[in-house]
Image (cartoon, rainbow, N blue to C red; front, side, top):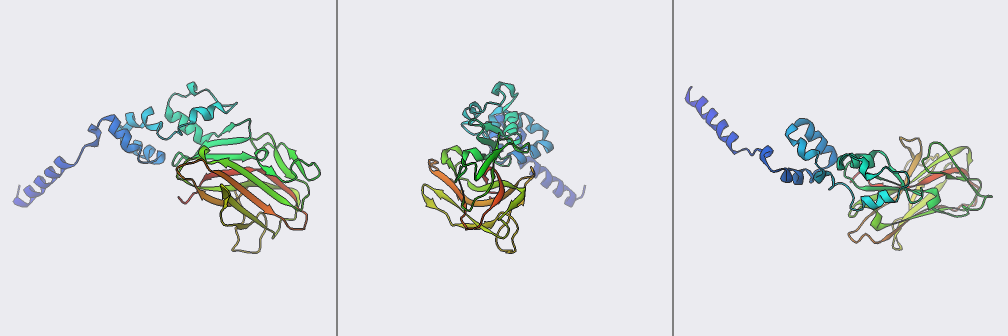
Length: 280
C-alpha cells in the first residue's frame, strides 16, 4: 500500500471510530429523541433503520403524541371502542387520526392531526347558534347519508344569515395556530349566494380578529376567497385563524354573517371545523 492510500485508510478508520452508533443507546434515550420529531418522520425512519423497531413500537413513544385527556375524550363518545381493544398506543394514535370520534351526544366530532398529533374538532350544526334556526319557516333539519351527524341545517328562506360557533380553548391543543372552516353544500334549488359577500370573524374572550370577506358560491372577484371542495365531497371556506395561548381557558367564538336585504335559500350546513393551520 502506498503512502497516500495508507493515509486514506487511516483517515476512514479514524472517522468510523468517532461516528456515534445510535443503535447502542438505551431505548429510553431513543424514544426521547424520536419524540422530538413527528409521526410521519418516525414511520419513515423505521423503514430504513430496523434497529429502531422496539422504540418505534413502544407505548412510551406514542403516549407522547396522544392528548393528555384522551381517556376523557373516549368517555364522551357513545360509539367508540373500548381502550382495551387497542393493542398499543400507536394503534390508538392512528385510530384517532383516521377515524374521527363522535362525542358529546353526537354534536361534535374529534380527531387528531396525523402530522403533529394536534387536536381537531368539528362542531355539528346542532352545536351552532343559527339565527332563526328553530323556526321551520326559515330553516329545516334533515338527515343526509354523506354526513356522520344525525342531521344538518338546510336554509329554506332568510334575509338575515348569521351562524355562530363556540369552543373552549382548553379543548384544543395549546400554542398552536388554528383556522376555522364552514363546512357546507348547496341544494339544487339554492339561490341568493352568487357574487354575494359574506363576512366572518373570530372572537377570543370578546376580542375580535380582523373581519374576513369571502364568497360561498360563484364570484367574479378574484381577490376574494371562494370555497374549495373537500375529499369528503363537502365544500369549505376558511372563516379566520387564531393562536391558542398557554392558559387555554379562553372562549373562542366563530361568526359568519350575510345581512343583505335579498332572500337566500339552499345553504346546507354540516358544521364548523377547527383544525391546525396547514402552513404552520
